[in-house]
Structure formats: structure tokens, C-alpha cells
Image 1 (cartoon, rainbow, N blue to C red):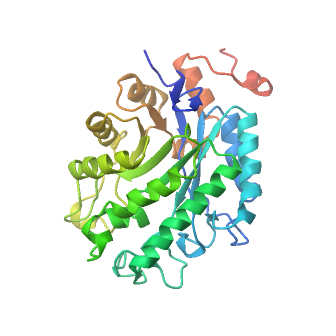
Image 2: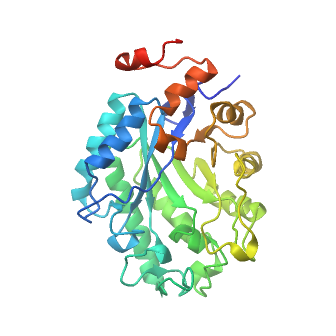
Length: 343
């Protein structure tokens, strides 16, 4: 039976286990130029040494005003490629495959002088009111995603993830809560996302899978639920998505509609529902820190891969320790074997 430390393959991507380091913003680009730093190098390479099979580099933005903050990574310039390539090459040296999450923050671009969005609706009462993109600007934005994907491939990634969750730009277009447009991108809520998917795929090798992160439900009053997520997920799948990374929320203040669950594995049912309805591989994420729990998500066929976020921030070698706890085979670096005397 499949388990957390069994290999996995999707298209041309071969993973040694099912442990994924999900994208988590570091806000550490001190020069504010979008270029990865030594912090990013140590951060990601240490998790490769620590046994994660797939490392997804944090939200990396397609234009300067698409960043959550000015301290975020970017892929709007060829000048940003070498630092990412250095990280990716080193992670490969230690046996990990590497993806990158390409995105635009839209109305959640805190440091942008004038954020842009599908519609001129601020995130909350403290946020700047974004400017609604013109139809031509939306089409230009698709091109920016295409060019970012092109640069990601030049940097040597094994997979690309599009950020269509957590209230960022693709999600903003997909959600009726944030998209009040009357043009073609409002009449068909999935149109922008589908065009971004197709543009991204046009730059990727045929055997490279495309992952898309989505919010399986929203937590605002009147927000969509899993049934709607399945329907737009089906459209994105047709457009070229090979795997969904299923999270939830992020689209707006949640107090009025109740808060998301705080128990472990609270988002796994969303991943399972997408997997079953669309017959597509999924990554589960959300408080899956305990090895036995993460293992059960794979063993029970709730998801194909498991993203371990905060636990991997605390412990870069989470995968090595999890394999020891579960009595599963994993290659431990020779230099660290003394730290695992039970093996």
C-alpha cells in the first residue's frame, strides 16, 4: 500500500516520497528587488537535505506591484533567474525536486501604491481600494504570467504551481465575492484563470506537471463552498491543471461567516472531495504535522501528496524524523547518521 515514504510519479516528475514543503513567504528580499538571497538559499536547501521530496518555492510575483510586500520574490526580470537557479541546483544535488509558486497579490498587495484587482473592492476597511483592471490590462497580466513561467523554466524548476487561492489575483477573478466585472472576465469567472493556465503551459515542457493551489471554500458570508470549487476546478483541469493543492479561505475577513477549523487535518476533506470528484491528484495541506497523521492521509487515499508547512519551519529535517517514527526507509545524510541511532 502507498504510504508517506513511497515514491510517486506524475507525468515526468518522479518523487522519492510524498512529503512536500509548501510555499511559505519569507519576506526576506532585503534589497526589495525580487532577487532571492542567502536566506532563501539556506532555507530551501536545508529542507532538501532534510528529506523533503518536493520543495515549492514561495509565492513569486509576476510584477513589482503584484507582491504582497516589497520584500517578496519576483520573476518579472531575467535578473532574478540566477539566484533561483542557484537554489534549485543545490536542492537537486540533495535529492529534492523543486517547484515555484507563480502569483500576483492583486488587492492584497500591501506595499503597492495602487493595488489592482478585478473590481475596486478593498480587502477590509484598513486596506487600500484597488483599481479595477481594464480588459486590455487583464490580457497583459496573462502575458506577465507567461513570461514568469518562461523564466521559471530557465531557472530549472521541475514543476510550476499557480497560486489560485487565499484571495490573491487568480482567486479574486474566480470568486463572485470579489469579481463584479461586466466584461468577458466577469461574465465567465474562470476565464482569467484558464488563460493564465494555458499561457503557463505554453512555456512548460510537455512532461512537466502544472499544479494549481485553490481555496476549496471561502469563509466570508455568501462565499463559495466545495461544490462550487469542484465546478471551477473542473474548468481549470480542462485548461491544463495536472494536480490541485487544496487549501481554503483568504478571500476576506472571516468573522461574519465563522472561522475555519482549528483541528488537525481540517482541510483534508476538501482535498479528498476534489480528488474524488475530478479524478485528479491532489496535495493536502493544513495542520498535518504529526507523522502518523500525514501517513494516514496518503494511506487512506485522501490525497496523493502531503504538504507540511509550519512543522517544517520548526524542523528542516522533519521528513528524516518522520521516516524514523514510521519505521520507513529514507536516505539519511552520512553526516547526520549519528543523530538517528535507532536506525
